[in-house]
Image 1 (cartoon, rainbow, N blue to C red):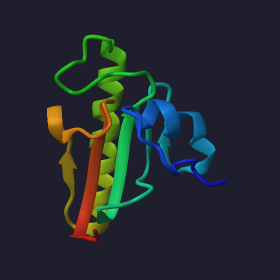
Image 2: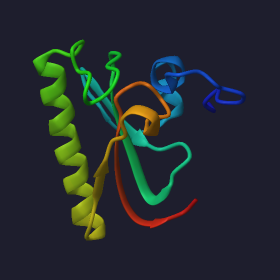
Image 3: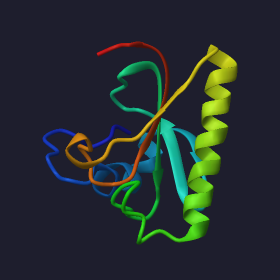
Image 4: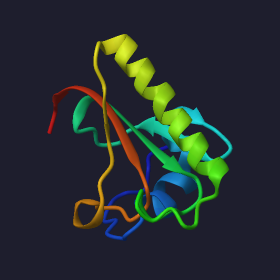
Length: 117
């Protein structure tokens, strides 16, 4: 199954496309509150994106998130980044805010290797 992304121009790719179509993703972690999957259009050789399963606008706007969700998100980030670092020797952890944040849903990138696009 392919992700229905053709022509998508909304503001929240994760709520609108990714989370309703988890079966179409290359899932790394599927927990109670957090999903991690290999990016559908990677920027780096290794590129995993982690998202809360409930809408949270951004890292600086976690008012809608409870402590359990934030704790699980950080735990999954730590675990995925640790796995990437162990396998590839290095890992990046990145989130964007404001105008840099294309999708207005908190998401964290874990990556390694050279940029591929």
